[in-house]
Image 1 (spheres, one colour):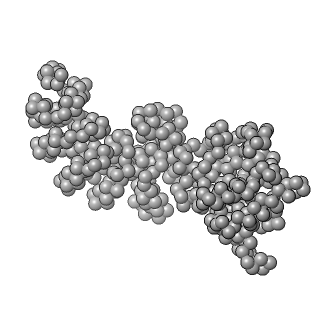
Image 2: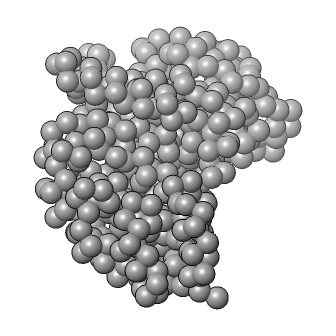
Length: 416
């Protein structure tokens, strides 16, 4: 016996409807309890709509009795969560693009006992993993004990029972089930989850949806990054493979994964490897927090090689690539390797992007503490845009590294 799975075509419509009809007949004969009703759900229009969307799949059986492929199961796989899903308190929370849903799994009653149901679920799990989904969700009628037992054996958790009106049928109790199929790294992040911290964290990052935060604290992320890198460097094949796969999955769907990615890159000791990972990562950074956490340790020993890259980053059209370039000049070239030309380069940047001009202000506020004379000259000559000029002064005045005398003078330099 061989079971194969494929996306359905319009040629399969009659076979799919046949399975629906036979399932209704079995229900009416008392041979099964699915909660489905003939003429209500599932019906031909359900299959037609799914085929039109391209998300209907079928299982075909071939054996000694059926040398020609026999369609024995059908199901709809997509990322569409029906309205009632919003009423469930899911254990594994995440954005819609990380959730895969299986709808209307129907097995030909004549094929029961051949393992088509569990095999179809495993096919769905594999497909979801290929599509980068880590959360699986499904529902079934509370009366359908056979399905509930099957899903439980396959590792699905019943997260709640939600009463609803289902396709016109009143008093239907839908059992909500879910399963997490993420990678080992994703699982470790979930184990450190702090929902309240995620709420706090996302409030600080404009434009980030709450669903994209797991809620792992920064010290824990740093510790995990060090552990993952250390395990991979020790020669552990599985650890190296897992980390390589993680670093090549961009963009990540969760803020915490992006933060972890930045911390892992910061651990890489080989400059060439590190810079390659930085350049691959930068275009996917979409917030100030991830940008500012990216601080490779190896850059300190390779500052002169870094300059070529910084110059390119400063000329980028991507907000956080430019911000990162300014940050690297601030971190590595305001002390013994300072050169006035670097400061001139920053002063020349003009942008309407808040997170770029804020970093310019931060750079000059820091420069006022480390290289006061050239930094003051930039302000005295008003070489910065008005907002950036005044923000640099404000941040410098708030700094403990600036003397009271310097602060008094800086106040006189504000542009009214």
